[in-house]
Amino acid sequence: PIPNLLGQIRLQRLLIAEALSDAQLGSEAEAARAFRASWNLNASLFDRPDTISQTVAMSVARMQVALARRLSLDPDEWRKRLADHDFRASVLRSIEVEMASRFRILFQGPSLEDRASRTDFIDMARSLLEAVRDSPVSDGIADRFSPKLLHSGEPLSAGEVLSQIALSNIGSLVRRADRLVVDMELTDRVLEAKSLRAAIGRWPEEIPDLAKSQMLNAH
Image 1 (cartoon, rainbow, N blue to C red):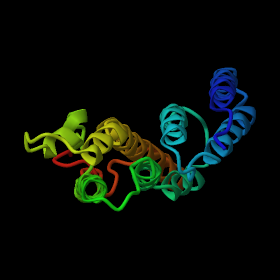
Image 2: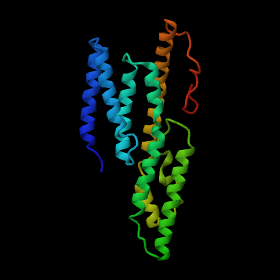
Image 3: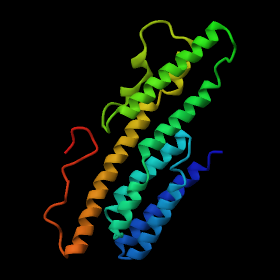
Image 4: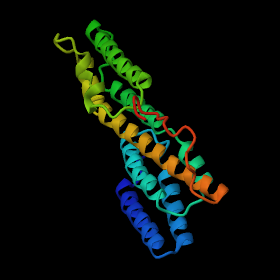
């Protein structure tokens, strides 16, 4: 069953506001405690197989990675934590699960039309999932993985109609994941700088591999 996501969002806002308030008041230990509670709560959604949970997890994670740059956290610990989960992969898994659940709606009869509809659904879904797997991180338009791009203009079969409905939000989900990947990358750079500062006693003049990015053509 899907957890109470609305309740989680409300609680997350409270925890993040508390962490920010504590940090502004100089209560760094309390801020770190609230931040850790927020992170652990959100981590319970990371591997859930439904797209709505993945959407909520990514929305909260974006708030968290922005806050992590401002708090006095252990940079080495949190760099590892940020790298622990691959949001792009978990989003893809949730899309695959949604695809499978929608596939069950199709008629399971032995007629040629039923079998053709199932084949059309599987072919279009597979093409889109492969496109996501093979695509680099990008801030491109949301419809770059739209099922409509694979439509030849011929009348749609039942399977093609259902695949367009089932996967209509794939572009938006992937773009959310990609933007989070970039946000986490930026936060990792900030935490790396803090780690170097702790090691050498001053802010570093440069950060190794700073110009590299997971986003295509970004520096």
